[in-house]
Length: 178
Image (tube, rainbow, N blue to C red):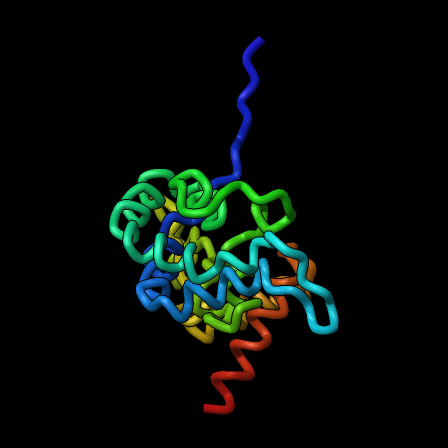
């Protein structure tokens, strides 16, 4: 008996967006501090990961080209997994290893959802089926397309994840205010 297992793949198009930000060592440090900096009023323990952030930023900077190439060759890895697999970070135990890249970039205030979340477009503006899915950043979608999706959700024609409803509504509001 053959079973087809559909594996969720992360959008490879996100990697160049993130790598462009990470050319800057300050942004590298922001990401590592997000994971390892002790919370306010928390006591730091000796030998805690936070003590090594500058060392890891330097290692990351020195190996950035190799890291970037390797990550682009294995695009389903999260940024944190690519850092561990490339030897830039040791595999510290913790939840951070499984943090999705889009959430990480937003939580670190490096990007807005419109700059890193993609929407799979399957139809052109005349509702003709495309031969393959076209992946488009939310900021690059037409206002009419976003409004059509939201109308279809409201009319119970389609269901999409609540975060996309929020992102689309935010995008419409953003465009009205610029």
